[in-house]
Amino acid sequence: MPDSADSFAPSGTRSAHIPTLEDLEGALGSLDGQRILVRTDFNVPLEREGDTTRITDDFRIRAALPTIQWLVDRGAQVVTASHLGRPKGSPDPKYSMDAVRARLAELAPGVELLENLRYDPGEEGNDDAFARKLVAGIDGYVNDAFGASHRAHASIVGPPRYVPSAAGRQLQHEVEVLLVMRTKPARPFVAVLGGAKVSDKLGVIGALLDTVDALAIGGAMCFTFLAAQGNSIGASLFEPDQVETCRQLLANASKPIHLPSDIVGLDAAGNVQTFGPRLPDGAKGLDIGPGTAAEFGDVVMDSRTVFWNGPMGMFEDPRFAAGTKTVARAMADTKAFTVVGGGDSAAALAEFGLADDVDWVSTGGGASLELLELGDLPGLAALRVGAARG
Ligand code: ADP
Ligand code: MG
Image (tube, rainbow, N blue to C red; front, side, top):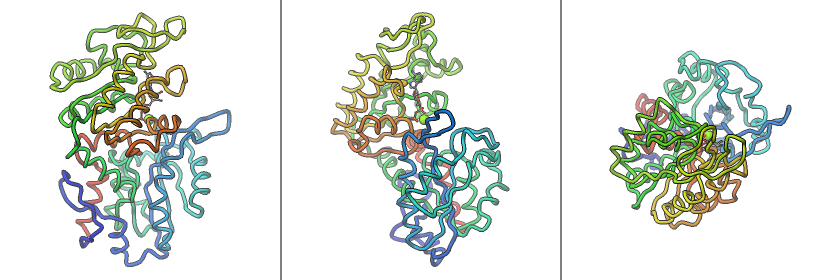
């Protein structure tokens, strides 16, 4: 596939060329009447009440619209496909795409959406037969699912083996922003980490310490670190088998790692309390305390580049939203270049009305962390290999 002026070549990746939508059009001649499979990340936060499911934030659906519109404008028949939640390889009505399909029909009428990709075990199993099923009758493939591109799943890495393929606009922009952040950040560069996917995220912290000048850790993630320091953490979420990893990270870190000095949570009787860094038996930490929130806010204000992934507490409950809100405000107020990654972090920012006050809201939490860590993702590598195959 020839290089075009629109190709993008993220620095710090192994090979230069990741094909763009323009390259795809070049490869297919014309997109008019062509069936294009667009792997989107429609893994949106949902709220269920009885039989009705409501999308609490449609940011990830809207993020795919520039790519979809570009293809539709050129006469392509667009078929979108996404995973939603974690059904275990079989149909589960709880994870049906119906609510997403309804919203997509409002935003992009006439665009198809396949059923949840993870209804088939072949998706997460990276089964080649499932990949071939996905591309049956398909003329070209676009990956616009940044939030899933750190997974070597069938719909991410399979299609470029079979049909001309390209990165969509959202994926392209995500990669550009995060790789600039990785390779030439204005310093000091601080990462603020939280959220609940502790074991997913702990692995990247060591590598992240090579890139950033300081880390601030809140959310459920902080309790594994507090435990590693020998603090009692009561009934808080933590990963017992990661305590040793955290202990070593803390012992060997050449950069400051800010951990909470106070915690808001529920005591054993279910009352909201503010604790120090040691929680009594039965107490559950659900937010960083006001002192910690102020400290993290100052760290954000004093930085020139900030990456934030993961809420500081269980912000869905207003009693435990204050820490996340303080960090979100600092992200909005600081003069630093600010990037927020992660579905729930983005939802929190939107809920506080601050989504327009940061420089970039990434659609991927795990993916943005991995791209910062490694400078590459399986989904990007697949597109490069597909392009090299020609
Ligand atoms: P993101 O989607 O931004 O990457 P995660 O999915 O990792 O973030 O985590 C988001 C979830 O973490 C939120 O639903 C929030 O309620 C939860 N959370 C944050 N802090 C705590 C805590 N201390 N205890 C339990 N859950 C927490
Ligand atoms: Mg999440």
